[in-house]
Image (tube, rainbow, N blue to C red; front, side, top):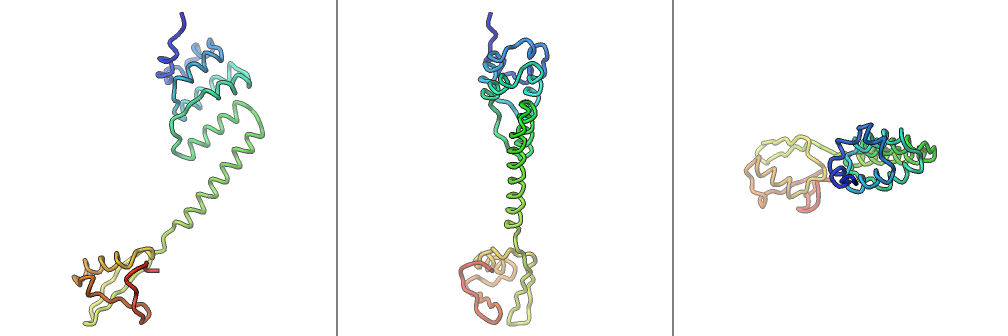
Length: 178
């Protein structure tokens, strides 16, 4: 009697480290299970590490072709899966490609963090009657309209009655604080 591959695939977490199950299944059986499952990154790593004990590279490649993972959310998950594939196949070119990709991704993340770092400034608003309001850590990307609303909330002066100056020059009503 043929095992219920769909049922096994849906309950894959019960089989990923079951040595008896894994050692008695041929690659086609494993492919049938993988066709009916979606592996979490940790399940992928455990299953394929265990399968590599019983199967050669060509069978592993065939089984990898049937694997489905849940959506990879973090770079750590991507790295873990690529390390597992590289390790079980033992192909040095894959190591090089995965390392290059990992390094490029880290470099891009680092660059985007630098670019996304907001420029914050303190603003001091002076009124004609010697009153002063301080605004701390305001983003330079804040729109003039949004800043005027902040000023209205803090001072009670309606936006339509506000006239802002920067370096003794009127500030336009559109754009950002930059």
